[in-house]
Length: 105
Image (tube, rainbow, N blue to C red; front, side):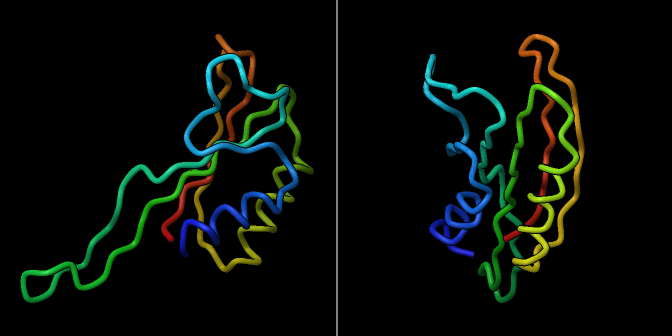
C-alpha cells in the first residue's frame, strides 16, 4: 500500500487523524487516530532488498471503551485484506484507551 492509500483508508473511519501525533495543544477530543510506520520487513536476495513491506501501526484513542468503533476499524482493515494484530492499553496520564492495530503493508 502506498502512503496515499493508507491515508485514504484511515480517513475512511471518519475520525480526526494524524501521522504519528497531533501538534502540541492541537489534539482533538477523542476518539481520534494516529498512524505511523515504525519499521520495515525486508526479504533479501542477491545482496539486495528483493521485497520490502512497511510495518503500519494504527492507534485508536478513546476516552471510553467503544466496541462498535473498534469493529468499524476492524471492518475497514478486513475490507482492505490486511492481517492485523490488536492490543489495548489504558494510558492513565492521558485518561485514554489506546487500541493498537499492527500490520504490514
